[in-house]
Image (cartoon, rainbow, N blue to C red; front, side):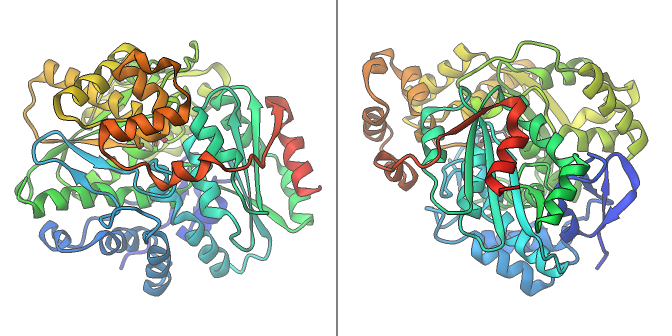
Length: 496
Ligand SMILES: *Cc1c(COP(=O)(O)O)cnc(C)c1O
């Protein structure tokens, strides 16, 4: 089998094995690791349709993580995709008519981040062993709400690791915050910052590229890694469910082998949809990847004009996990459409960091035909939740509703009849207030947990374990800091 190496999107000279890319998270020059080639599926879709989620996961990951042994990889997969998921299919594709819903929220924190973050800790410890790393791994993560909890749950009490999570104090839902601040595990630390998600993400990136700090860490037996979606160990596990969803539809005779389908992806940091793009490049028959944004529609504008411009107001919406103006993973796409040119990409990223804006060439723009971008306003999102509920009884969360609403626009605009899967990224229980408000404003006066019980009656879906747990859980983490004090907060926790 071909060895895949991982190069930095900003420097061709850097090329490391999968395990090293997973350990590092981000390349030294601030670039993201990308595979030097995207491997093709080596099983037919029919063969894959006879496999369960874990088996499909192995078939995909073995092609990317070529320096892992079969035993190592299978061991990671078995530990990740087990009874932590409350559905035996792990990621079921719901419905018997297009649009289908690919539910990615059956893991322990009821959002799609569990799909990758339940395996990342195992990939990381295995990578550390393979590379004889002796330092303790410190996971540093910025979260718009869902990554933080999923990473905390994944890394809590994992030997040889510590995890520090920064979240925007006023930018997450009440349930998201409660999930994080009640996290147990002596190696966990959660900090609310005065600032938004982009501030948190930039702060974390700055700490990562601080050479002096790295030295100090090293002297004290620590090394940083990232659980953010910039880590290739998160991106690749996300390719799996696109393939799995397709072959489930095939198995159920909803589609024919080779038939092209669309995926609609509610997008923030561009990690989820990029995994779909990788799946397509591996040979999965995907027609369009429909990129759905909320009012922070920087990606929609980018697809329309070829200009990426973050100089705009940051809007707090009811889909907070998509409240992002710097979509980190887009860099991997930019690199690719620039003809795998680290030089061209580095120039654009430097523009982005200096003036908050860059423009791609027409030639690059032509490479974006795999994508369609649009956005949904707050009213349209709420409308989508209410109308689908009244029509079918199915209750979507706010992020999924953004995707649903964008899909309606796409259909109206293109009259495309291609069968389509809506990627459903969170359980409605994670955003109960916004979801219930969308259905009926009469719910306004109820408390969050009263709403949870109402939602159960309405949706006829049992309250997930993740919500039951936090009803009575004790708040453990109360640290807050300004966005300028993040480095000091890390030092304090690590006693440096
Ligand atoms: C993280 C997240 C998204 C956005 O995914 P990206 O990979 O950042 O584009 C969408 N919905 C939910 C519920 C999320 O947690």
